Length: 241
Image: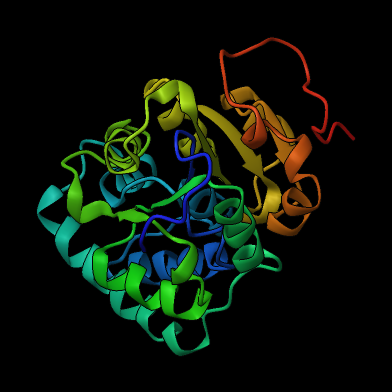
């Protein structure tokens, strides 16, 4: 992950689950089953809407803040064990590795900012196969507060070594857009995690693309190529349909 030269004053911060890896619905199933094991019921549609935030926030959303918090660790452990059954079959989204390499080739610093644990992120990085394009990573193990708190984005900025005005966050969930906004970083949304265009733009994403391959095809017309002060209205290159 050494310096590749070029324009190193700009960084692209990437969420991983649902943004680079096709894992959102695997997490949905794992949380749904973990809840069932402890006698809780939540429809998958609600579980899915919480994927991408930290487990503490997700459980607040599904079970309420007045729940028995003593079970949180057990619920998270059950989710982790269920999700780990898919590790050997994890797959990147189309164009994900090529997108990271294209950003690196343009001299932009590439940082992964994931709510996953360090161990879980290592498994996803192995499946993604693009470590040659990654400058730094941040995980849930590096911060005290999870998304939609801005802590993860702020730590990613520190590791990128650029100010918020020279970075763009790419994510698939409203929690990504909210965390980026709270950290003063502009956001590009992807539909590959199953959230709608309206949800992402409502949370603060300035551009929305179908997935990594779509963003890659329009990379030089996207917000990533020209970060700067936020502006109102659609930018050229944004997908509006």
